[in-house]
Length: 111
Length: 116
Image (cartoon, rainbow over all chains, first blue to last red; front, side, top):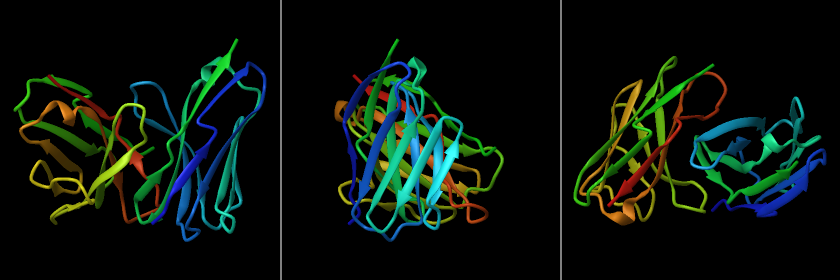
């Protein structure tokens, strides 16, 4: 059974610092991995989707890497802003469409 | 881009009431829809998978007679929480998928259900 772990559970940084969020998974047989953002009481906003054949994806200040063999993905957020404060979830798709979510990393960026 | 509409976004009702949540794919045909549940301070857990025209498949520990799922068309799936109790209070969110194109989940905005 696929298990997804996110470290750290919470992170607080001053504005301008880079954020590094980690996600690990136990079964490397995946279709893709997706990073989401969730604001309190809200739904999910998809940030980046990395296919199993890809090593990384970039969008603006966000960069996500994938090392399928070691079961790891890292989300980098450059030059953090207070608006980046949210919970970040990684989700592994290893059984078409059935996403296995990590518990999330709660990020607070202080002005 | 693909849009999934989920309604209602928030509902409060008395214990014993049945509540229906709708999930619609607005600009694509969703051959499969997934329903997730998120309790406070926890991550999302898959409840069930529904394929258009077929009976839903439920994850272990999810009562199929309590959480009725209907996926009668390629654009609409509904989740009905029957005889809801306070322990059913949660955030419910759907994800719509299509067989065509990139395998990517498009999520609704979720429904916050509070049972008094």
